[in-house]
Structure formats: structure tokens, C-alpha cells
Length: 113
Image (tube, rainbow, N blue to C red):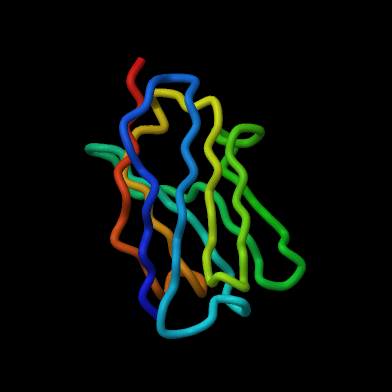
């Protein structure tokens, strides 16, 4: 499975972005999907996940109420809708499938104050 993350960019605090993670090589419909991020000088951290069965979602506390993870199995894509962005959301965002078995290349999100 190859994962391609996109949608990052430079925005101001309070703006929104939607990240996409598109898979090729295999369908994502039976994989749990997740997003992680890594800020400069920090370790990679979990952001959000969605189970393939039931679509149950989970978020790190710092993004609850602002970020929404979703999936479109027909298009083999997972999304991360990010609203009310804060400077501390800055980092490289990575998508992952199958409990970390597969990783995308990352997309940069920079939020200016």
C-alpha cells in the first residue's frame, strides 16, 4: 500500500485546512486509518484515528472539537478536517494505515499567529 498525503499549507490562526490521504495498491476499506504529526524538535504524536469497522474515531485531547477524521472507502481516501487552527498545530502531518504498518510521506502544516 502506498499512501499519499496532501492538503497542507501555510495558514493563519483560526483558518481551516483539509488533509487527504489517498492509497494505491490496495483498498483501505478494511484498514484502520490514522493521522500523526511531528513538530520541529519534538517526537511524532498521535492526532486522530478511525476504525474500519463502525467508523469509531479517537482524537488527542488538544484537537478535540476542532479536527474531524473521516474516510471515503469508495475513493480509497482518508481525510483530516482541521478547523480553528492554532500555531501549536504546526508540524508535518503523516497518515498511516493498518496500525502503523503503512505510512505516507507527510504534508507540512504551518499556522502563523
